[in-house]
Length: 557
Ligand SMILES: [Zn+2]
Image (cartoon, rainbow, N blue to C red):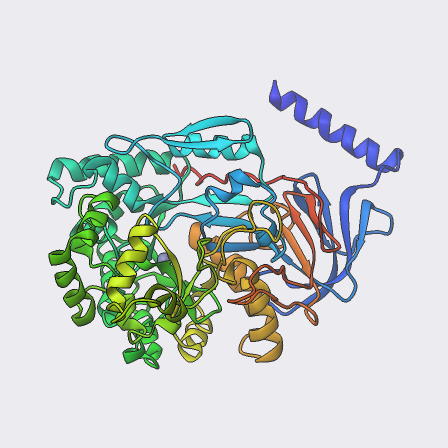
């Protein structure tokens, strides 16, 4: 039946284009500098889009497009793939994905410690508001369905987060998983990947992810290998344990025979600043002996984490309510302070990483201290108190008042280390950020500027101003490199037959305008963004179109 219909449909299309003089393409991008995502040098060419695919690149006859976009003087590139993103729930609040679309992002890769699902076993289903109704998310299928029903401007890829499968089986307990429990986690991982996830992601710095041993991660990655996915990880310790932690990722990739991608590679402790060359050497040596370890970075020197990450891991057992009880207990406070100030072997401590300097911590949440550095917060918390409180006591009090969570931007790594990582062949771009907006409900808190500026910043600062990267290589790091890591071969390149995810920008003008203290500014110079053949950003204006899809890992046979 289908076989008989196809030639008929083809001949009809042929007839219409030749004899009825219908335009052959829905959109033609005319005369731009094509940077195709391979890393090859730019060339002049037209790009013809038909339905959701790229149909032609090179010379497209005049008048062949229903819509013709003059791309002269602009760069025509594949849509950017954000290799590390956190928009899981924000996309359901507002599918326009403003701060990402305006960076040229057409696909967001979601999942770190946690992912949007699963919520099974000892985890209760995740209840979320979707316009006028409530949705219950149990599986990744539920999440993808909810996303597509509420409609999104960008495409989405998800991993299965280690925390979800760990806590679905173990709950809030810090007990070692039995063999049987580990098998249950593997089954949940398999289920998530069969529902379309591209692999396993983890954050093994803090519980529950940090409870997983290297052997357990190798065992879980066995499922990843079998189903052809990748392992993406926030390493155990980005500070004084950075070399051991990178070694651990290499070991996992080597033993499980999987591709590993280190999320937001950095050296986040002032004592080890300037030693990124040693991290690069570890990865290069592993690659030289056939272990596929890669990494991504965001082009900033401050990270975003929680004030609660300064609380030692042991105090998190039992969950947030138990942690708050410990913070209220005077004897436990004494022990907490000792561990925070002296450190615990192997534990990455944001407090010592910034030299205990409160001025290097900036409140990113929407509480009353929003946008203030913690030294000013401390001054406020200490006023009228004589003698002034121990700053750690003040911090415990703040955490108690904030129900255990305060978002903080930590100034903990350096430009030199970041740019050295950025320049490596295997290092791609991921924002570690979410799709916010400068107005409406998603103008929220004092978010890290990476949410608004990551991709334009790479093009403006590190390509145009500093000439650290060639334009073509920067585009490769935002497009085909990320697609190749994931095993997506029909996006990330401008090629006939690929999906029409396209970003058109002015290389002379592209600039990020979001800063740490004044974050709510979109970037400039991204002119058009096309997602699955539909124009979402049109001369710098969001059209409200939401052609994004949940991309599922291709099933391999
Ligand atoms: Zn992270």
